[in-house]
Length: 198
Image 1 (cartoon, rainbow, N blue to C red):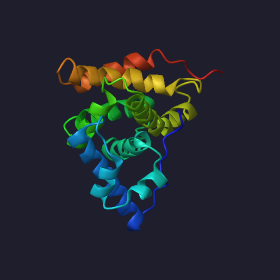
Image 2: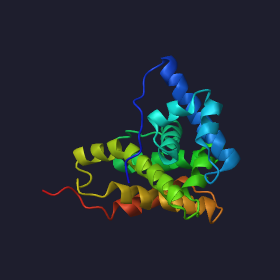
Image 3: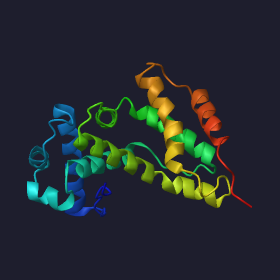
Image 4: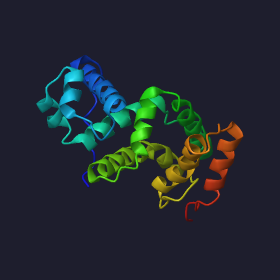
């Protein structure tokens, strides 16, 4: 599967306004029609640009939704430097939990956990989760540089094991997660990770 195409972000100007408009349009389209009936031409209309402009930047629906999901994650979830991987991961969990009440985030969550088996939706889900993992990479780079974990650690698996139970608690068990729950979860995962080889 090709990597999702993420356009280079510029500071200010028309390009930044267009990207913001596209992000909002994608989220609104998902809220109203879901992933199954998602329409790129309607997104273009919502954003006030041509369909051809969208296709020049994003080759398909999966890439476009992954882009919007990545921007939503960057705005709603920090990628902190709290001085240790443990504190970084706890902070991420706190902020992830805070996004559960946000309508834009919930639209992306509904996409991520859709049970539809169509190849297009599976591609979109894979692109979304891949980008979420890649956004966390600097946090793990710092941990490797500090000698907290070995460079061979599967960072995607760490995110899965840390964040997965939080989603399960909220959306399956329908229970809130306390700070202590998040700290214990992070500690349990970190204890299984190999330290940097001598």
